[in-house]
Image (cartoon, rainbow, N blue to C red):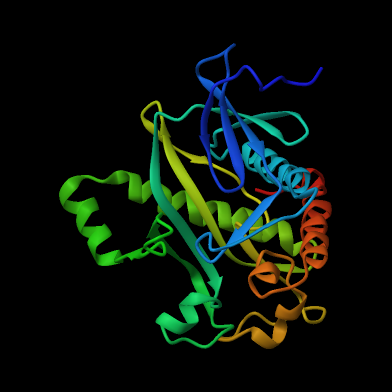
Length: 266
């Protein structure tokens, strides 16, 4: 029996999802995926028919893996297609937390590093979530100051969780000869603790296939070991690829992540 949202309270609507209150349980809400896709801080916008279902599949596959591992997430279950039941937030933390293994995208320009530079250990950065301000990054030195002087331990928890989640997903994608390049996640407070929230879909990370078997990652720059042109992520849309091709890339992510349940990730 399908869930009827027509009589439910719409709590919020974003670029890719709608949040509905759960009349049967005030401690949970429903996330409903939409077919929308955006880029450039929302300036670029299209509809990809069927994207909601694909996003829902990817999100389900990844969150179920993370829950199985023991990561503290808001995800409960996916009761029907395009719908997720999650724990209701006490407070959303208005930050995007980005962990990077390989330098690409904006960091190449503003940090003046070569694309393909490999970070070991990974680096994690906080961005204030605001499209008109272009999601500005918060200085690490200032965050450390907040932790030491203001007791802002949420930052410590988010750093640790983001790096841990990255490590687990990196190991998972390795099984399919794919490198997790970077990962963008969001967090919130439920009860008195920090939880991973929102979605994890094709717009949450960059995925580059290996360029050949047995790549050598023990070098400062690994661009030649990877195949950026074969990327499976939202960059295909950002770079102007046709909508049909973008959808095909997302479908491939859904296919790969559907096999995460077979993996023994620790």
